Image 1 (cartoon, rainbow, N blue to C red):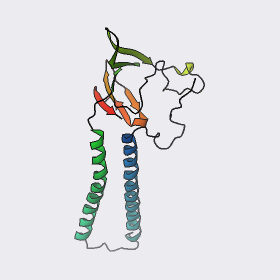
Image 2 (image 1 turned 45 degrees about the vertical axis):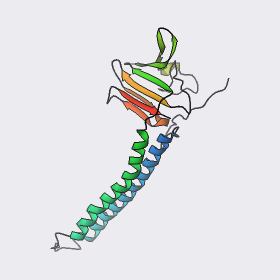
Image 3 (image 1 turned 180 degrees about the vertical axis):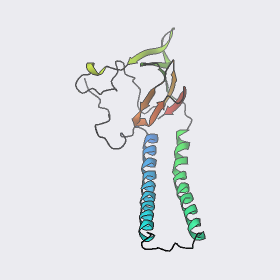
Length: 201
């Protein structure tokens, strides 16, 4: 029997899990690009604050300056953030457009959140005249974990999905919807909404 190893989170991990879809790769790239701009702005602002504190300390300038307006400076600090936001907007709009791509899914997985477990339904495939494939998935308690199993991630019935296939995931709740996530797809669903649908490649 062969074992498929998953890209599970590790202790003291810094960064995201390896992406498993083009959308996840795009989100991670956008995150890294925005982090670069954020770091540049942070370094510049800290440098300006320290420079201002150094040059305009009361011991060096006992008489306050009479200058209260600087038109050029105000234009620069208004236009520069706008320019940075426009640079960030181009890839983020492209990513949002690609995430909203309408495709005909080959498989639909309905995820129903309960207070302490999840119910999964493959609504496209019927095993009998009664309906589709439905099963419950309970998290394995920490005391019952075997060597190599992951805490808070192992369940008694796993969801099996095909790769390289368009999949629609519909999430809803019967009573309480805590969270449901596939970090490698950058798909996170929390209790902010009661119904969500997303198509993955």
